Amino acid sequence: MTDKHFTLTDPESGTETKLNRYDPTLGPSVLDITSLYSDQGVFTYDPGFGATASCTSQVTYVDGEAGVLLYRGYPIEQLAEHSNYLEVCYLLLHGELPSREELAEFDKSIRTHTMINESLLRFFNGFHNDAHPMAMVSGVVASLSAFYHDTTDIYNPEHRDIFAHRIIAKLPTIAAAAYKHTLGQPFIYPKNDLSYCSNLLRMFFAVPADEYEIDPVAAEALDLLFILHADHEQNCSTSTVRLAGSSGTSPYSAIAAGISALWGPAHGGANEAVINMLEEIGTADRIDEYVARAKDKNDPFRLMGFGHRVYKSYDPRAAIIRNMCHRVLAGLGQQDSPLLEQALKLEEIALKDEYFIEKNLYPNVDFYSGIIYQALGIPKSMFTVMFAIARCVGWVTHWCEMVADPNSRIGRPRQLYNGPAKRDYLPVSERN
Ligand code: ACO
Image (cartoon, rainbow, N blue to C red; front, side):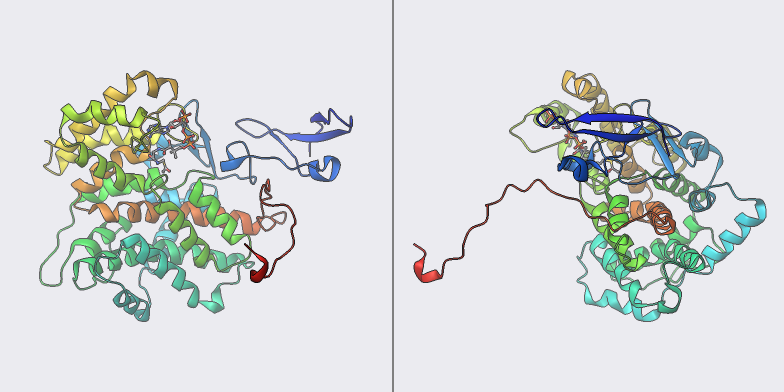
């Protein structure tokens, strides 16, 4: 509770409303407007929710002005340097870093949930080989809600734990099955003595006819990318998971809704769009032309991987990925990357341009990630799937936080209706 208030006065009637003001641990305070409609008869209007806190949360903090990102209070730079993806998963889910024993137990549980029901594998046969992997993955994840009935009581904390471990463990397996389906290659079963990212690489790239050697540089690079993508507070896909989940639906369906929201090019689909854009630009001498197009109000083209709703400075995740690019590419024997050179040049030109400076448009997490995915041999159509695998833990954590919150209610926004006023139906014979 709070003793701080904002007083809002209707200038016509003079009616006063006291709005509670809540102060967070970090960041701007919020005004509680829940009494506004009953006191003043008005709603608030905030399309895109740019100024609305939809929930309280203890998971992740972003300061868009300062370029700060904290998971459970820990700076992303420290986690990227010292932690690993599974430890970050534990941190997000439980709120604290694990002890050695807790981490070993968590790791073991994730490893033992990697297989998917054989009947689920047959779902892929219903898709054409050219189906986009995001379409297959969202569909198959939604189908998980047809399984596990006896362990999906959302109000049972143990069931929520089982769900969390299952979906985190199975998503790479489902993603790999989708990829193998597009190639027409046999599915590769998970191998539980491998780490999360090594297992993923093997399921993606091994074939039964050959030995497959996991490149530790590739596994490490993937692990780092996954840490950086693990959560980002109330972004579009996470808010979608919360909204879908707020009705009490199956958590697998809520996660599938998040995957669908992530797919769009304004969100997680941007990593694929960035590489398409860089390839379309082709040569450095054409960058100016594309920057000019991005600034032209009559042209729908935008610089993909640039701009962010919250970051008005350099996205700290983009800075980490940009720094890792040279190291990872060299480690993979691909130091001469024309695509990376092109991206660096584009960034240099855009960041000196008045339009981008004035609108605070900087590279976001998606600008450089595709360059690493491509160097790992992951095709463009799978980039957003990789993002979904990494972000799954964030979605699950927020869903758990919401379901466990006794104050959470079904999400149901209001509207500013500007359609027709009430009118009477006319039979078709009387219409001209
Ligand atoms: N290229 C050119 N202009 C841009 C760009 C861009 N990438 N991004 C924003 N702008 C301009 C807009 O035209 C707008 O100009 P105006 O004020 O003159 O109308 C202004 O900057 C503000 O942009 P909005 O779209 O209002 O900002 P919003 O917060 O709604 O959108 C978004 C953020 C969707 C990320 C946007 O910057 C964008 O479309 N970027 C490209 C797609 C992308 O990279 N998405 C990934 C985001 S990161 C993530 O989701 C994981």
